[in-house]
Length: 127
Image (cartoon, rainbow, N blue to C red):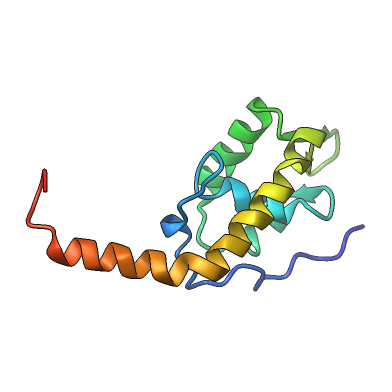
């Protein structure tokens, strides 16, 4: 069994929606990171992804499965157990996710300042 996911692996004040690089949607990159260490159950994924609703996590996992990024394995048990795991294609995103995280560590403050300055000078729609 893999080590439990750290509930603090994502900074709760991280402006993930401000990330200029997103894979699929704002949650896919974080799910990729959660699955980096191996297969996980749905409830395990929800621990560090505190801001995601069960519906959105389900949609994200289904989209990732459709795109060939994760495999979903359902076990015939009572209660039912389902696990998700990165495919080789999904694992190939780890390099991209880490590069985006490194870029963000270096440049996100400047990007946010630029957005704030732009928004402060914007007059209205079409500006």
